[in-house]
Length: 504
Image: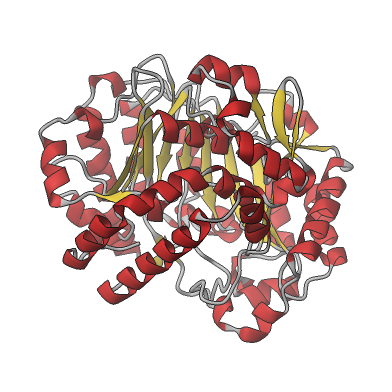
């Protein structure tokens, strides 16, 4: 983002904060309900754009070992590892028009260079902390852009390094990617995965989006595979005792509810172990190809219709022997009752007991400090060029960070728990020492009034309607924290005016 766009975005954000600072919580809820919904809460609090940039002055403090810039990774806590081998996608595919994730055009040579840089980051960061040497890992996730597009030789070296430096024997390992690459690219990365990693269980996650051939063509995903190929991937994975997850989009422009329900039925019949349902994020100005098409944007259902569709899809999944494990994820009951249950995401929603170690472009790391209620979250540079340039500097490699105090850690905890559908009141009190009802009393009252949450003696849970409006719930809970940013807006703008490399 160029400097003028950066300042413009900052000013819009500040103006919105000022407008909302004088709004009652009840009015704020209604205002947010009328906005575009994202329905996923993937990253938790705060979003990347709200994380601070690591300036040269702050980097000096970090290099000097200031504790605010050091990840703790305490040995008694669970550890998750996320690896983004590269940030490339396949340029032979004319799309995907709906995609909101940053990515670059693929070449085998460039991808190999980035994977080698990821290996360099792994070596450097693990060498800096004895607590991470051969550390047991609960779950390892290869994801971001098209992870199964990684060149085979580079992927083998990466897997071998991870297996040597970390203890993966009890880990769940996931490889994410597009369906066709799981069976058409040779040698198979699944062969490499199972040959090089000593892991408890393997799973794959693939972006199906829709089983409808007409929708695949509209999305620019005709080359990613059709229903016959998707079935072949499921069959091949199951023959190796690998579980399979598929992502499906719903509320596409002009898509009927019967089309949405047909996708669920096909996925169930095909044998997917997990189906993830994602409401399409699309609005004018988003920056995606589809968002620049006025006809597509005008064909979207309004929020009332969209939430009705969500509730019908959720009911259909629960009737097909699936159970809902998170806001978006549905697993077969048979899988959920054994050791093959998907745990990476579930554990990532537990910031009180699990840390995250992220490697690669735009990777996120997180660790709780010894006091039990402050933490550090960091994010690597987004593009491959920025990422590789950062690796030439001394530690830390990341470009954005957030230093959690007690108040902001409470927000992190409740928003992460909402991704698991409910906040257990006793667990909150045991971790944070206060009453979750009292800490957000006005917010819970307003959210309950709109039938977004339910409260009983044990927990605060999202209603089915509240699940769809989950980002509204999270933003209302965090409004006081965002309002506090107004006091820092002047100095922040001066910093942005002088920082030509800043981006949001």
